[in-house]
Length: 380
Image 1 (cartoon, rainbow, N blue to C red):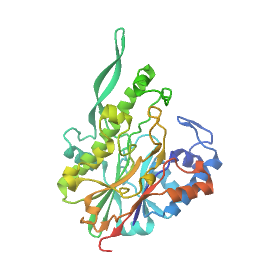
Image 2 (tube, rainbow, N blue to C red):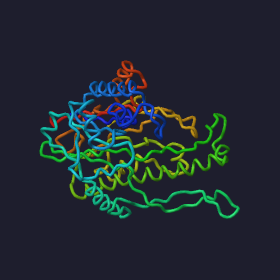
Image 3 (tube, one colour):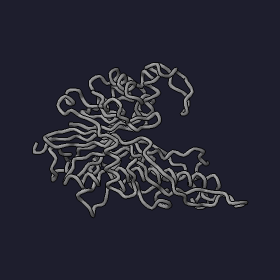
Image 4 (spheres, helix red, strand yellow):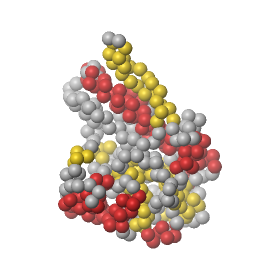
C-alpha cells in the first residue's frame, strides 16, 4: 500500500477555469486565473504525475474547494480514485480556497470502507490532550505587536489572541487487518507575510538589517505567523496525545504541508527558540508517543520538497522540506500494526516530478514536490 501527500498549488483556480467556475484571466487575490489552455495542461500534468507515482491513498492539499466541485474534479482528472467525503450536512471547517481531500484507489476503498473523523470528535480529543485548548476548537496564543504610545512609535508588546485552524486537519480512518488506522492530513498556517522589506545584502549583518523599521515590522508579523503555525502543530500533537490515552499503540500517520521543516531557521533561532517539527513529533523521552519521519533514512540531498529563498537569511539553503509524512511507533518493525513502514520506505517523488515537468513544462506542475511512503504487511 502506498500513501502519497501532494500539494496541488492553487488547484481551485486551475480546475475552476476548466470547470467554468472562473473565467480565464479573471482577477483574483493572487493575481489572475490561468488561460484555459494553461489550466487544462495543469490538469493533464497532474493526472500524469499521479499515474507515475501510483498511490493507493492520496492526500491532496491546496485542492479545489467545496465537495461537489471537487467530486467533478476527481471524476474528470483522477477517475480511478474515490473522493472520501463527509455525510450530508457535516462541515469540513475549512476556510479559504485551499481545501484538503483524501482520495483512495477505487479497488482499495471497496475493501477498507474509509471515512473521515468528525471535526467535533477531533476538537473534543484535542481539548482532552491539552488544558489550553477549548472544546470549540480554539486556543489562545501570545502575539508580539508593535504599538504606538503617544509620540513613542513601534513599542514591542505581547498581546493574547484567540486562534483556531484556518484549514482544519482532515483525518482519514480505515480498518486494515482488524486494526483502525488514521491518516491526519494537514495544511497548516502559511508563514507568508505581506509588505516584505528589501532583501538582506550578503555583506550585511542581521543586527544592522534589523535596525530598519520596515524589517522590524516584518519580523513582528513573521513572529506572529510562526506563533500561530506552531500552535496549530501543538493542536495536532494534543489530539495524538489523547489518542494514546485511549489506545496503547495507535496506528497514526500525519501527512501534508506543515509549512516548516526540521532544524532552526533564523526566526526560530533568535525569536521562537524552537523548531515547529519537534513540537509535532513529540519528545524521545516519551518514546512510545514519538513520531517517526518517513524520510529519516533518505539521503540529505534528497530530503526537500520546495525551493525558497529567505530574504532575511540569504545564506540558508533554498532547498527546504515543508511537506512531511510522520507515523507512530505502531507502524515500525517493532510495532503492533498489521502495516509496517519498512527501511527506505519513504521518498520525495523527485523522479516522477521531473519526468512530468519534462513532458508538460515546469510551470504545469506544483511548486511542491510530492512525497510518499510504501507500506508492507507485517511478516511479509
